[in-house]
Amino acid sequence: MWYFAWMLGVGFAILFAILNAMWGENEEAREAAFAAQGLPPDPVSDSPVGH
Image (cartoon, rainbow, N blue to C red; front, top):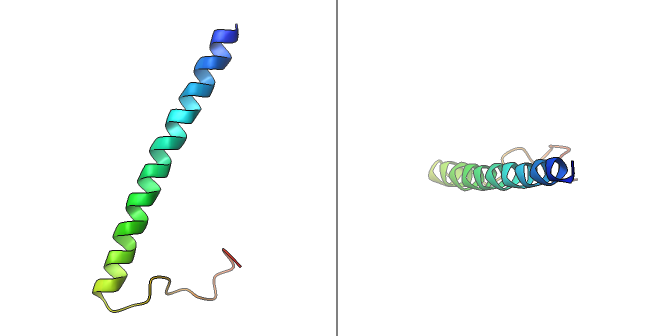
């Protein structure tokens, strides 16, 4: 049954890599959209995330 755990781990690693790439693409597009509108990169400065 070790192969089941191995395949599950590889599957999660691939899923994480895909989601990470999608997140990065979204952040780049988001920053470009804000820059095109003349807004700062993070318009929500009072957000609790990252503080």
